[in-house]
Length: 198
Image 1: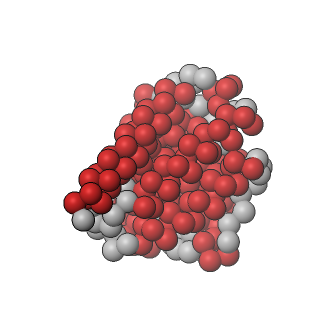
Image 2: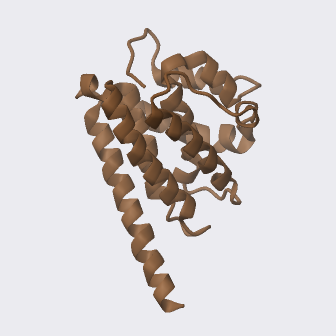
């Protein structure tokens, strides 16, 4: 999960990929090498981070996100995806509604991102530690009550941390951690309040 230098930007590559007919995570994984962890995780958590009605499909994506994060934590250099996930098409809801918002957001981060702490972010220890943090955020989004919107902040935290990795910007990673922690606190506080009422 390292930042890279390329003639094309991340947003250009994503836009080109999302315009293809057969948009699957497996194809994205095969195309992007070391960027796969961050990009696949970001795409899996994006629906939870957006205020869109998903009908509970986000919980399935969050379970797959756990598979990705666990591989980060144990130090795998290549992302392995279950066949069901690799062959899963992202669908029209994602490509028509979520993808345009994702691209606008990625372009905005792209314009403001700077290589702040890129060398530290590229270390094995940093990837493993942030993998544990991301696991907590994914679990927070997973256990948030359906249709409550409480999964938005933990999921947004994951998306921002992944973008920070991709651009080698420690400030974006910190912003993601802050958003994720705030989301976890909300889930816990409101969950305990609801529990006490019942």
